Image (cartoon, rainbow, N blue to C red; front, side, top):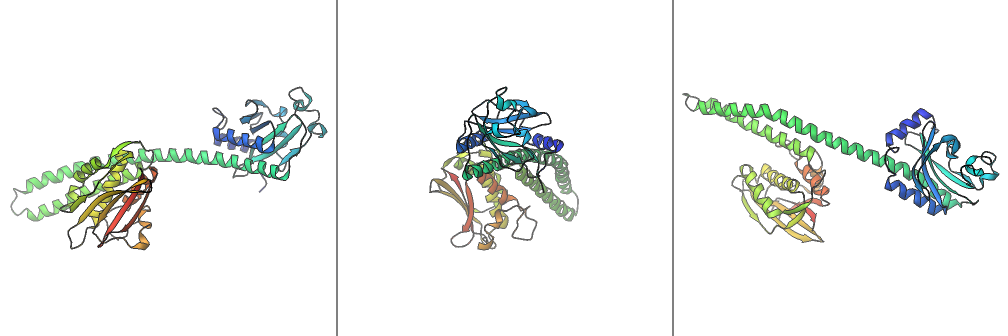
Length: 386
């Protein structure tokens, strides 16, 4: 496909990147300075072209400005194959009497440019370098100019993707919070009604069978509430991290209270747990997910044993949560941290607990993995920068 300079599509492409508002972006300023230094010219600019104007969205050796398209050289070469190199503009019949050459606007002699072409083959502008004296570019310099022009478009695409991702994550978290509230409100009402019914059945002759069904319904409603909480945590955790000093020992104290119902009579032991820098709520979620996950699959016919510990490993704190349960097969140890992966075909979760843990740990600049517990079981570890 031949790149197009059709005005309507070009303006749509420019507006999509949002480069006409605000000061020059630092990453674009760095690229345009590099272009000038590589090509050994005193000036360089990144231009984008609207219907009537040329906008400098970054410049080196001069202040960014807006000029009429007819007063620019770049607008006349948008339809030409890149790169364009003109050693002496006074010897080029197209530009020898142009105001930017004759002294009316400027006295530019040397000019070279490469078009900025979007992934949809729309030409939105140029990367150009110029000087007041005639000169040449060697093949390496021409190649470098072309490469830098392509990187400009990459930078614009990356910024656009990052903005879209941040906006999407924010909308997802808001949506999840709203859905969580909307679902849990009637669920709470159902649970309260079932518990009230359960109390009244205590005085009803032969109400034991009905009471058993009510108890099952109550457990189901509680489980549904847990699943809603899991979905909300999955949508909201692992993004922006609030960094402060976090006492992991104190966090574990709180978590053990919260998971008391799920771990039951498990034998729980603890080693030294350090202070780390991170988000206390998110790190609490990590530890709670790991303990809940260990308790969820239990130890079969043995009493569940859990140990929480930490050690220094190559400039990081490695936190471990070990259990004596069924363990995780070697071939599945990387896969369990992917979204919606469950090793067992059951209804004991959404398959997002360990993926939530991974997202939080990686947002803290850490890593996560799983090994076998000596004597049997799984030991999940995660590293946090010390």
